[in-house]
Length: 454
Image (cartoon, rainbow, N blue to C red):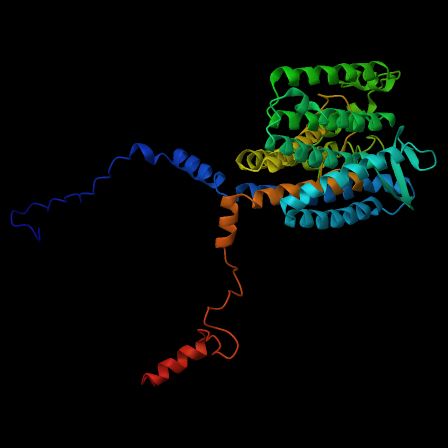
């Protein structure tokens, strides 16, 4: 054969491939992904972006769901379909201004506002009980009419007042090293909280009273209250809660509806709780589609307020509800991180109080919709319809943003950043000096011609 002297066919030799070095123990892709995620979570601005992005996403998604869930209710009241959405959008715009203002305020100004906000909240909450001024909604006397269709619920501002005033009070006592004595830990924090609770319970709003109690326990916990002291205050609050529930048929009926799957007869018919479960069950994995809820057509009461999470589950499915839960979890994590990394006592207590407030209210609302907790009548923060609840909550989110920006590492990271467009001029540039020469195509072409290129 050609190419072979012996007449035999040439031997085909295989090409040797370079040996692949064995993987090192640290080359595990899952471990590398975990390390990258951990590094991203440990960045100085992680809490800042989580609070800002999470709160904005919750608010925007809440506006969409309020528009979807409130259309039928508005039409049943002979109102335009977008009536409740327009009011909520106006509240969101005002709340956004409050959020921006709170995020730009220094910590000293926040502390200076604590006492005026507390005094204003107590005055308005007392004004609710004055005949002719306060008004009852759904059996609770906790509203003040502002004229037209606008109302205000002062007890919602009591949450913000307790957070700011309580944080300032505990921080001052810590500076004076008085927190080691139990009387300074409790007085006047607990008596003032009980004053707010009394004004709220005069109107019959036990749901808001539970949130204020949770804020009190959050402040005591972050302040490092002894276990015996903490258990003592918890026992007193639990005893009062049992008495208030036992003496009210309406509250006993709500307690009896935990885990109900079928409507009943009598006072505890569990209609709202059961239809909330029906809405969640019919949503499936991805929901029936935005605006395609069936339960909001008169079957589910308060579809755009207390039970908006049920409508979300019906229209957006399990994916939508898990997204809402993830956003609230990220918001809670960021608040805990801000409280744990700061050196300022006021920032620690205020961040802990705000985080407790938003997290506890979200758990109580979602737990009631899922049938795991009694229906307390509290809205889902930043999500449900209600301007009185949205405004102080967005101001509180602004507090967290300000605290997250105020961390030393976060301040350094923000200071190192330069604007993407319109960067600052060099130090030598100024009035009367040669303007900056931009590297344009015309400049490169003229430079090429001047070098002798034709």
